[in-house]
Image: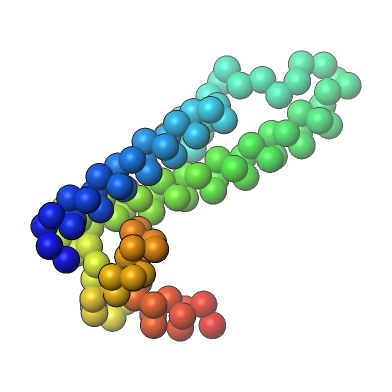
Length: 117
């Protein structure tokens, strides 16, 4: 990939990062995935079951978003250290189509397929 292409990828990853941080904030979470202290899930005993269910749902969403944010941060770091587009497992180049579909990919399609089996 050319340096210009990396800048485009970096810009897209930074946009994804901003979006993920915003979504985490909307759920009452810090960027670290920790829920802020000001998040309220129900104040009475009668609300306890509903609050527990809502909190569980929010925690699952936060965990998913945090995982996606971690992947984006890793991809940005790999651009910075010159390892973007190189498979972490076999060291071969990750295909352009895979990187276009999943810019945060760290494994080539062959290695990813082997790990999924």
